[in-house]
Image 1 (tube, rainbow, N blue to C red):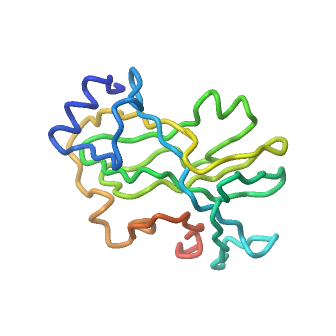
Image 2 (spheres, rainbow, N blue to C red):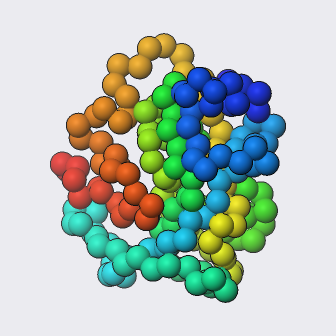
Length: 178
């Protein structure tokens, strides 16, 4: 079940959902709009290896915008820091973003209960698109969980994306054993 606007506000009041900064104007009927942070990153190497630590280079989006190019994976970050202690958060692109040919996540739209951080975005485009820090980029949708949680994400010792950040984070696939 997806939380409604009223229910999201109730959960914010109880502290089970935290959104910083929070702007009431960004609350939709059953979602909350998030915005593109000021940092992007690209991988240093064109060929990525799932078994290796693929390093990234961070850069700040200029005030007059930055043109994203096709065939390049950009890592972005939300301006908003979120915590979700009782619900499963999903990050989806906004229709206005999609209609510009911008995809904000390749596969990682679902967060875990206990996820406390900004969201790294896996941005790709179908044609060149100029973007700006602070523009609406996606929306968070919250789902109720059936059953008790045994291990929250923020308490897992091996959680790869637990370190609080305001910059995009590269893939940590290399930490897996395979």
